[in-house]
Image 1 (cartoon, rainbow, N blue to C red):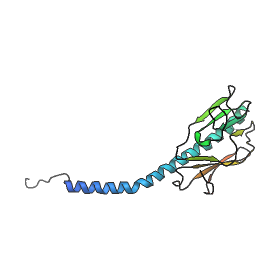
Image 2: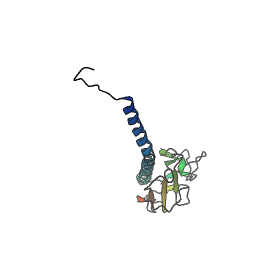
Image 3: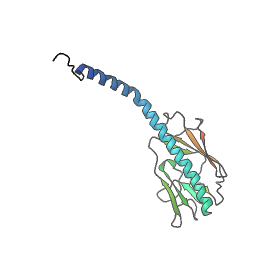
Length: 175
């Protein structure tokens, strides 16, 4: 080496130490990233459900028709299996089934296999009448990866068809 010149770069030992420190930090942060992603997924799904319920009520008022939000079985009957996804459709008789006279407005795919979506009332569908009323109270609970979500939210539906978000108190089992 000539006098006054410096070598730029890292030695092999310095590079190995930097990689070891990076690996330790990555392993330390990975579990918190999983929780962060689970929380974000739960919040996104709950807000989508909230907006879909509000849209279903709006469609019932706008079209002056019965609008149903429900998960459908392979026979196009409402089955109450909320984690399998759901459809919103303008429902002509027979009610709670998707027939040739019904118009599908929104269709949502099934949720993540590790997550749970439950409805507190024992009904297979949420129906909005032409005045926007449901005639029942109930709450949707979305639980992501069961124990991971630190601040879950629920969607509450009133008899008048109003929809709101509330903090989940943790007393409902998501299984």
